[in-house]
Length: 96
Image (cartoon, rainbow, N blue to C red; front, side):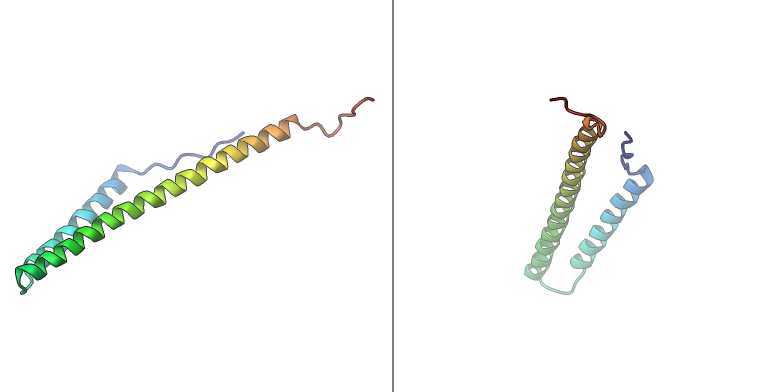
């Protein structure tokens, strides 16, 4: 019985994802800070940015949880099928 290899992220991939998030959020914050608008509009845009960031994090978590659930269900179903196949003997004759 072969088990699929667990996919692990490399340190470089993790660093790139974190750096990309920091650069994009930082650039947007700097852009909002230097906009020629009053404080209320700046605060509104800042709240919009925070809402977008928290929504993206929540979406990433939901997608990850769904993927893990599908993998777990698939492994359970595969184990059940393997058990049925090992117990099945096509040449067995039931004696009366």
